[in-house]
Amino acid sequence: MKPIKSMTTNAQYAELFDSLVRVSKGLNKVSSLKEMAAFLQTETSTLFQLTDVWIYITDAKRTGWLNHVAGVGPNAEIMSTIVPHINYNDDPIFKKMLGQRKIFYTEDLLIEPEANKDVTPLLNLRTVVNYPLFVDGKALGVMAFGSFGEQTVILSPTELNYFDVITEQTALTVSRMHFFDKSQQDHLTKLSNRYGLEKKLRNLDDNNSDCDSALCFIYLDLNNFKQINDNFGHLAGDHMLKTFSSYLSKELKSADIIARIGGDEFVLVFSVPEQCDIDDFVHKIIQRIKHHCCTVDYRGNKFQLEFAWGHVAVDSKDYSINDLFNVADIKMYQLKNSQVKVKSARVVKPQKQVAEKA
Image (cartoon, rainbow, N blue to C red; front, side):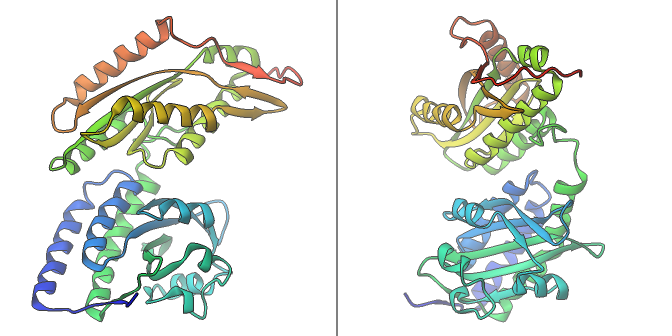
């Protein structure tokens, strides 16, 4: 396939300017890194045919490492699976980019001399625009845009300047969300808390205001969680919550929001087409959680977590957030007291009792 060649006409100058205005306004509204990636992917896929956006953030505990924290596009899962971490001291492209604080662009990564010859063919990653994120002289991470498969894209200097322009505001947005604004985050699981859920819902509603989509809310209540704390200690209970939350984040990448709103209560939010069969959609999500998120090892014991659940779908343009929380509370209360609730959390193949003091 021939590469897409840029043509910076007067009309395209106008498109670039209009996009920069939208980016300037939009980045002030996003409330998560994934939401930011999705917003930028909408802009850059239209302007430049760069189909995917992904973000790497510096690891606070491992010097020289970057962690994949968000990705949006048809190849997002491939990227996060094959390259979950990068040691930028061992990668000449990333080392130079962060050292010189300059954008890296290549029309075709497959023939780039400094590209990783083992990983790049697995990704089939072609055109790439990477730029480093710095705030007050501190490296925060890397923002990346790319095309995969057979398609390559030639970008003009004017088009590359577009990425230069948005770099600073992107870095400030990442800094605000990932490093400083912890009020929306549950401290134990690192998921959104109730306040974070509310704020993200407002932004999600604004972004979906012109879309024919519905919001599907799935409520999860881990069963008899108190028994785990009583029998195995609070450290065991904390481990269950953190591991379960980590599994949810890994397995449900299509979720717009994953939040912990109570001790053992979680909310999942998905944007779905209005014509979608909600019951079938929810059934598939629940089965995925049961099969991939509920087996947790802790100090020689294998726990099989069980949960009650319920769901509701609403038109994304026709609900009150306060009403939604009231419905959530009612749903949770009904789940806790319903007869359909599964038995209890159980230990599979216990090897020894673990007694701990809180």
